[in-house]
Image (cartoon, rainbow, N blue to C red; front, side, top):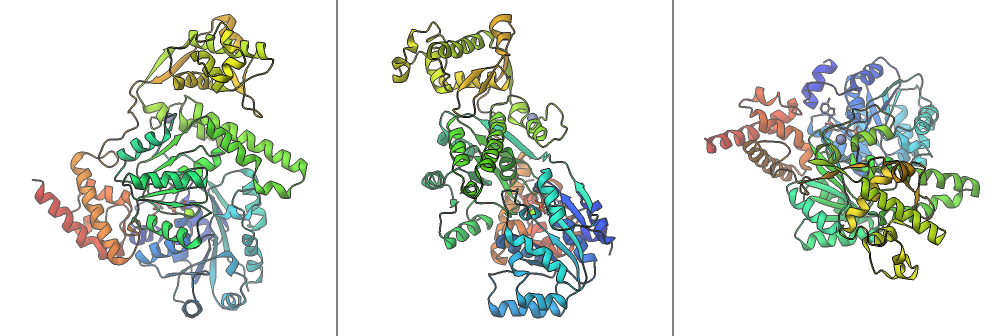
Length: 610
Ligand code: ADP
Ligand code: MG
Ligand code: ZN
């Protein structure tokens, strides 16, 4: 079988995604490979497919037990003989796996890095024909990344002690130069085929909301997405617990995940989410590495993360199967303080000398500033992200909150002048600068204690914007910052004028700002994705069928078919097995196992709708 045929017959896809083919060809020709692709880009395919074509077996080093189990399950469901080796196997199971391994019964075997130098495995490995060693989540080898795992360093020794060197391939979604260099050097990749694909994920919709109440906003967002599965990230354990509790009180099926929970509880919650028994996961950033659940329809950040890197990785867990998904961030100013707190109190810093610590802290503050910039920009959000990752992009993407909402441009020159004057005159009066809340209070004419104590109610600008709401004023201040007339001082988060401010204050430069006309623009249509009514209904039925089949087979639903596959089915309505085979994501084995059931359900639906 050639690779094209394999792609179709086993995995059910008719074409390769960008970068896949080049990497696969390299490995098949005996070269090392290094694939840098965004989350959801299809990295697994890059080693699974050659693994099936090469003689002997492919070993896949993978950092997380849940990820291994998932991938092995998905491979088996597609008819590929696969297994994993990690600490969840008991002695008897382990011996069975070793026996099967030696008998040549597996093509693809996932292994935890710390198992590589177990004596038991070493003696088995010597006798195997290992054609390919794939290192997934390869950034774990770099101390520069957030996910450094010392056990990854063992990979190198393991390769060295094999009777001959297999093809070595590394995959990661982390794009920074430092991490890339580390992976290449530490793993000692030999002249690898290297592919860096674009980081854009066109199926993801990005939006930043500055709500008055995050809880109410969250409720609104979830109601509009109540048929979907999603993740809500919060920055602290306490917030995770309270948001999760709230959602359950309101009748949503939510579970939580954070490092403070007992292991068993955490695992149980994770599985409830993966198996779609609970549609919503509320978690800290401890959740997610290696989570390959493909039908995550939204990722909502209840709090702002501390960097764009972290944000893009977490948000990127939405829509991995390529169907439309939403990445929404709920921002308010206090998120910046929380993020700052984490930067100042991070435990990693304790092992560094003061100079190193200061440097790291500066870098982290700069990253935080970029993140805050994302929350405040009025330009295309996707564009902002691509810019950050050094990638070209069109000015308007048409699929983010800043491009697609119904916006209207308003002239805020007068208000801008008042705001800038206010900041300047507070500074002149006090001799130091103050934060956004106090500036807002002065402009609104608030009788707030601090305003009165500092006699700011005596300023000529006091109360000049009293007809405006608090969030409106904050919105304008954010806009002035995004436009470069203001900046936030890093240390104390106070507002300072830049030299550009003179243009507005003394040269009558107009200031324009986009404002949303329709506050409900974020609510998607009731049906799934962008499907028409009937299609949406059929999709829901197919989803029900999928979950029935999944329960019977004790598999997570997305292992049977992804949402993208079900949507394609709802759209094309295949009538025969051969038409069914043409649906994206339907391979030979799955067609044989599930084809009849789905065809029947489609036929039934059509009978009822004519
Ligand atoms: P990554 O590891 O890069 O984050 P995965 O390997 O988990 O991404 O793949 C994400 C999704 O993309 C999976 O559902 C997978 O089946 C799908 N996929 C992979 N290759 C293709 C392809 N050529 N065509 C369509 N879907 C694909
Ligand atoms: Mg992956
Ligand atoms: Zn956009």
